[in-house]
Image 1 (tube, rainbow, N blue to C red):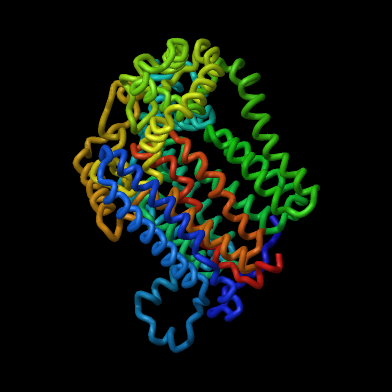
Image 2 (cartoon, helix red, strand yellow; image 1 turned 180 degrees about the vertical axis):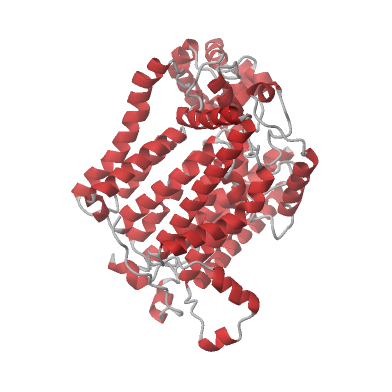
Length: 584
């Protein structure tokens, strides 16, 4: 990667001309706030069983004002981040012992390798309490299935064979650490080794991200703020250390995002360097191998980058990571690796989870109104008794884990019937969808908890037959983990903490605010497209959140991990100095 220009910090006060340019109508903000408010209140309406139309309207008005105020506060926060943070000599003379200590431990992200090691060490110290609390490791439900596949034991997905239902590379990684632990005396040792390695990898990647921001013309406060966020926001270390496929995906996605940002910042000039292009291709493949939707994120990112790079040659080179990822995922794995290694391909039910969920509710509420031929198709592709087993918060009992020949034969007729009934029963489809995805848009309420959770309690202290058979470590500290979860949930229910600990804030509200402010700066010519394209990691993540199989269950927490990782990037790009941005 080519050396980037020295840091250019934002001026203390913008010119009056720039201020006039940014005084654009707030109609767009009002529309965004109104839509978010209406969706949030619609989810509350579904949870409470309807009623109270006047009260609903008042709630929508209040929420619209709330979202607008939050955005205006966000603007002031970005203005503060963009200010020059230099201190005068007299300020240093009046500094306290604490501020002097903080200056001493704060790394210089534009410095040498020693400063990088210092940054890694400080973050590691901040993460240490969460690391000690999690030991030997926080294990998720899907990981138990993958370890059982590694051992060749029957599991909820297969009778012992490997399956691509979960990414094979993730299964291999977990299996290798499990086996190392078994050789060293107990699988718990292997889990602890994994927790240590993934924590180190995540810390190194986060520090690398901050160093990139520090060398890319964002304000000092912005990149130091990103560093503090990665160090101190508890859910960053908690989720990054988990033994789950999303934790493996996160550092690779962050590195891929940084490469995309560099391509955008240089308008594709960095792709002339073969090493840079090779790194981008390798990261694209790894992102695709560690998450089922990763290949689609890669392709979408390359398409968006094509609009900001300069020249057809750079656009052609962007085909390489997209083509390489597609070749590996759709050709090499299913046609070569899976047959050779006797791996069962993953089913298509994951990609059509939302239509399956909507069809199950359709059968439950309007089954008597459907023609027999349509009912036969729906019952044939859904899990047995799907209408009776329908759960509004998850799709597992509707979609199942196996893709049979019967399902494959019924796929096209099913899609036609699903589309046809979407016109006839839109309310049923909307209810099924928004109940499932309400964690991404609704405010937490008494019926549904949509806050972030510590999640230490998950799987570790609730052993099932599968957990015992897998040999994975279990913990008896149920009261401790339960107390932590209750404390975090209670904290998130407090009025002033609720927005910041809400899943909706990180998945929807903050991205909308960042996108809105970016568009305003583009219209005011205060930001170039080369830097605005730093939103690409967010833009390729959000769509897949909105087609996830759950948003309010513990599983939904791991889905939003990329959103936490890339959140500071969108804030940082808004502090890029206007003059520097226009030079690109």
